[in-house]
Length: 63
Image 1 (cartoon, rainbow, N blue to C red):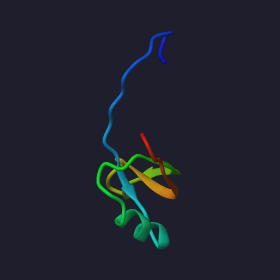
Image 2 (image 1 turned 135 degrees about the vertical axis):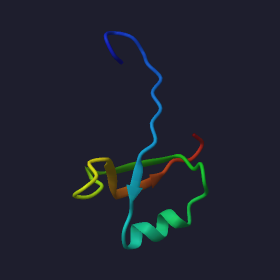
Image 3 (image 1 turned 45 degrees about the vertical axis):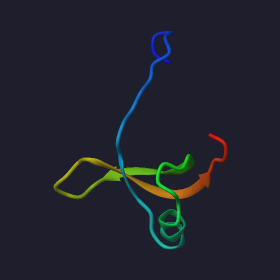
């Protein structure tokens, strides 16, 4: 919602998963619906582009 109006929003964001979570994500089907939590950080010292570092992933069925 913005200014009382519903908006459709689309964005592409690079994400990083490490350890066991990376293996779980690698086994996922492309296009699978997921609910994730994590934090945003800069890609690096020379690039301020955001990268989402995953902490949890939940696969959603029927969506």
